[in-house]
Length: 223
Image 1 (spheres, one colour):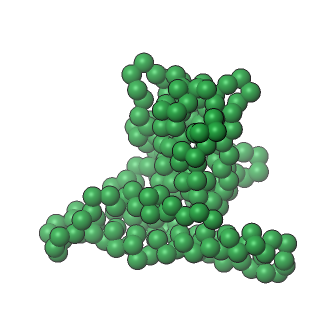
Image 2: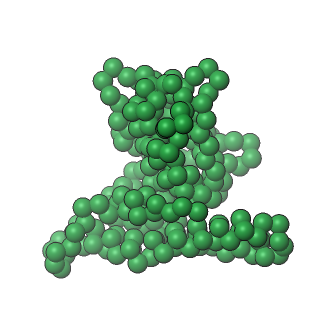
Image 3: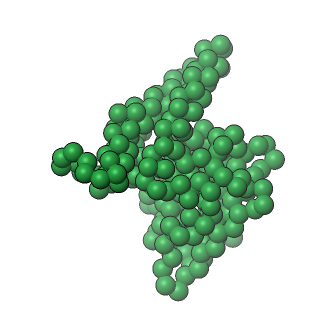
């Protein structure tokens, strides 16, 4: 699987350039978050994607495939806890508790255009920082694509739970839909983030125009 993970995962550590020993509590937190990212999170992410590739290569071979799935889930749990620590170190704990509000705050809306975020009553009151961060980045990319490449005038983001114990994040826009030239814009990154969370990612042109981006994550992976 293609791996553009350096650009995908180090968002939290942008601007952390250690020129000497940390001189304050905040600098120490940023320094530690950078170290956790470089020395722990990054290798774990690479490991998850390598396990995924092995599972795909040995699909249908039991019990090997099942054992790999167990290993992948164990690595993902460790990574989730690690990433949650990093989110909290950067004072982004609000994303865990008020994810819909964080989306409204973090999503850019050009003048004259409309963006609406809706969370159903079934959406969890709290999600882990690892899931929150990656879902935020997926939605940000989808929204940016819709404004910039899809020529959208309105976007709707919906958060809900499905019938199969999965959390669903949907981004709908009224733009021109997916064109061959736009399919590469951040799509690999969004799909990798969904895979890292143990979920799936789809993007397709809607029947009545515009684009539908959908991410499905096992709800247990949000806890």
